[in-house]
Length: 78
Image (cartoon, rainbow, N blue to C red):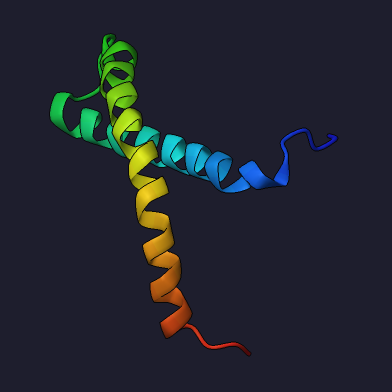
């Protein structure tokens, strides 16, 4: 596959994908724990996931620079 996103947007796309996948998994697990598995699971999960992603995406973009700064102080080069 040929790259099509400019490198300057890499951190935004990274945040979009990371927050989307993580919120998908966490909301799915939480939904199953709270409601169990039944026929309505996909629609209930989707209803829980989309607002979670809407919160997680900007949160990742805001928090990531702080985490990178912390990591620069605690990770040594080999």
